[in-house]
Image (cartoon, rainbow, N blue to C red):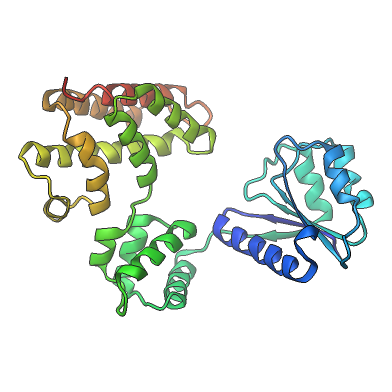
Length: 323
C-alpha cells in the first residue's frame, strides 16, 4: 500500500476539499498530535526528515501534509521512501507544481498521483445544482448561466457566492435578480483593493499591490483586462455621479453595471475630474489598440511593455481625483 500521495491539478477547490477531508478523517481517527502540516517554502531536507522519520504518537498512523513541492536535490528526493517511517503517510498538495524542479518529476514517479482537473461546463452546471441543493435552495438554468457569466468558473468563488445568495433567497430559488444585486463579479476583489488605494491617492501602494498580484500568478494580460473592465464601469459610474445620481441600485439598473461594482467604484467616481477622465480614457483606448495591433509587444514570455502600460494606467488613474 502506497505511503506517498501527490495531489495536483488546476481545480484548487476540489483539491482543497479532498485534502481537508483527509485531514479531518485522519485527525478524528488518530488524534491531532499525529497530523503534521509543513510548508514547502524554505523547508530544508533535514527539517523534513525530522518529521518524516518519526513514529506515530500512541496511534497506528501519522499523516504529514506537505503544502507545495520542496526544492530538494534529486538524490534527497529519491531517498524519501526509505526515510519515511513505515507507519507514516505523506500527502503532497501542489495544484500547479513547477515542473522544472527535479523534485516534482521524481516525487511523481513513486507517489500515488491524484489529479483534480477543472470541470467542463456540463459538469460545472451539475455541481452548481448539487451545491445549491446541499445549501437548501435551487437555481434555474437561466440564473445558473447568469451566475457563471458574472462570477466565472472558479468553484471556490461560486461556492462562496452561492452561500451568500442562499441567505438572501431564503425559502425560494435563487434568481438572476438576486445575482445582479449580490454576486461579486470575477476580478472584483482586485478592483476593490485597487480603487480604494487609488481613491485615497495611494499610487505607490496601488503599484505595489498590482505587482504583488503578478507575483502571485496573475498574468499581465489578465490584470490589463481587469483594469479595462474597471475603467469602463468607472466611466459609467462617474457620469452618473456627475449628474448627481448616487443611488447604487438605480445606477445598476439604468446603466447595466453590476450593483456590487457600483458600490466599489462610487468612492473614486465621486471625486474624479471629468476632463482628466476623458484624457485618461483616450490614452488607454490608444494603448489598447496598440497592444492589439502589434504596436506594443506583450507576450507571456516578454510582458515588460504591458507591465509598463499597467504602471502608467495606475499612476494616471491615481491622478484623476479633483484637486
